[in-house]
Image (cartoon, one colour):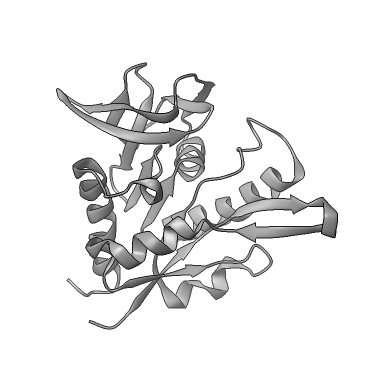
Length: 211
């Protein structure tokens, strides 16, 4: 099967010593694509916030909204505002074209917020902690200070934390998924990560008619 590309957004970092803004992506993402069999035959295509997302659309079969930076609703600053505007455009394009999206941490918060979910400050979500699907528990890693307390239709919860906040969700009718933990930081994807990421990647194959 020919290589396919997944667009992936980056963290925005202000480098004061050089008076410049940098678009940064953890090398963990490259390792995940290289070492996790689920991602074959996909490669990440890092997008720039200076290039309209529409220019990337013809070359990708899905999008990952990565972590890093707070939403402007939680920490209002120019970098968060810039990222919010760009990623909102991605979400709107994805909805219009049924392009699959996987939101990780901040990306999940943004997807949830777009559809009317509520965000609240949280504690105990830094490092490893439990998430549950019914009676089944999984240990995942999280690095966020704000959590999704409620979802709004058409988002459907998939997993929750012990404080009852939402840890993973999916759209009921579109290929949109959100996960509050960092799959790129897992030494090996847990079963729950594999299930959700696998569903997302299958939708990416479906988008291109490769199933």
